[in-house]
Image (cartoon, rainbow, N blue to C red; front, side, top):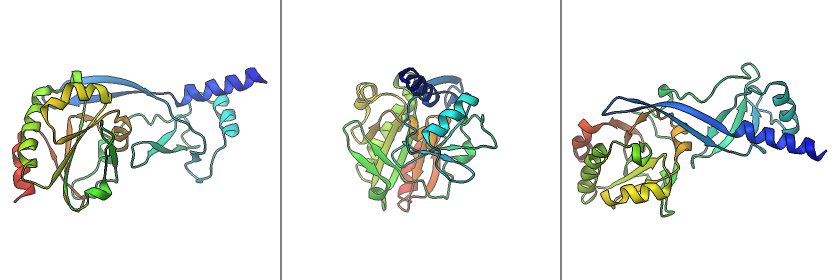
Length: 239
């Protein structure tokens, strides 16, 4: 019995250890880099049938993965960037959900989905608190693989605007809090740094590095910004 329980536990861990390999394109060099990350999540009380909405028990699921070890699960993320539901589609049991779809990114003119970012100094920045303010959310690579010239240009613009504007800027990185604190803090004291952001990248289907999104006080997406349009941020916020 102990060996059987140990086998099932290991089977769960192997399944929820989701190795992702995504093509992430850096704007300036237009080079494709393969990134592989492994994230472990608990399925307890979070697993549902995508067709019926009915919960799936761990006992039932253990039987399913014994019959089909290649089961794919669609993850639904909460505002903290954590999976709140895992959906199993019986019609496509082995579907690969690791590929991100740019068409599912927040669209210009539409409301940016709710968020709560936790910064490297444990400050929470929530969409609820940001209502009525301009917000920029920038998604970027591991610190040692970033286009630093691009980030320096961005930081200089943000540093200048933040002195006179009602703007909150968040950098959500794939890297650890320790690494981005060490490598990026010196460029700006007004850009809020957020590490370990893999869940947000998946939630918003981010594929390009960097991706920089301007959000208006009503929390609608105004524009996707690149290096050539950083100089326009001031006029967009204060027309």
